[in-house]
Length: 119
Image (cartoon, rainbow, N blue to C red):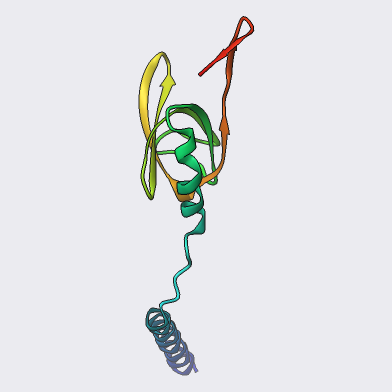
């Protein structure tokens, strides 16, 4: 009885592995890859914010660079996949790089001092 169940489990495991492998091969042959529309959308919008103070809101927390929900800073550089911004943390300037597909929103920040606005 035990050996019969063991053989049945091994056969089911082998069939599962076979199914997964063939499914992956079919996807590779068909070229089914999810298009990254978000990154392209931000690559078109963000050049208008170069050199300005912005707040970048991220989709998921980026603990490696210390961004939990959003990050404020000056947008310095931009390419097809990444943006570079200079942020002020604890009276030091820190450069951070964020992937465009991790961005969910961008807000421009206007600073006002004594009735006058500047960037």
